[in-house]
Image (cartoon, rainbow, N blue to C red; front, top):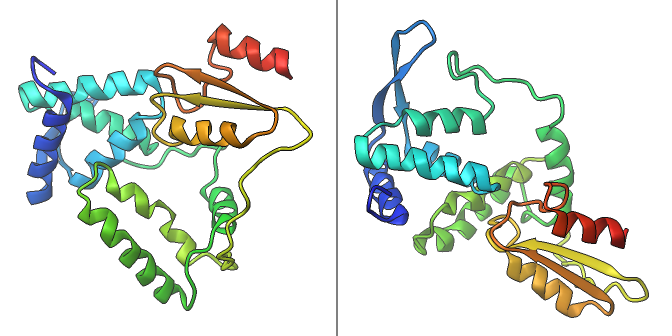
Length: 227
């Protein structure tokens, strides 16, 4: 990071943005500049979105270095707009026919219990559950609140019983994991594997969130042969 540490550079920018958003000039295709605002929430959003794949992690580190060395927020802003599927010129949403938030939450909100009571009471309980997370001063702690829509989702599950751990008796099971995957920590996959009666574990150094079908023959060949 220009001779420095990436975590230090991130923390320095985060502390600055917690105090107040930063104004910067964003270049338009016309050659003109438009005044934009970059917030702490923007930083956490682009950081979290960039951790899912190796290329995005590289681009995020370069963008962070650009700010650390030159106080240039434009590269981070470009990554933010890409992560949010926004047109960088107009900031209008770019529709993605392959993804639906409605479908995501209709499934997600049935997987777990999001407290009980009225939507407002469930939301308040969710926020209070996050107090301990926030107190821990964790990086990207706002990710904890990603399922907040479930507090207001119609017919969201109120079943507090968690499913039994998978043991997959009587059939073989392949578990895939990547050491650098932030969404499904590799230790979780190892725990699943250790409980299986007939399990096989494939772990990729570094790696993206999904390791199959990314052109790494060591992984792809094992999976297709297993299938």
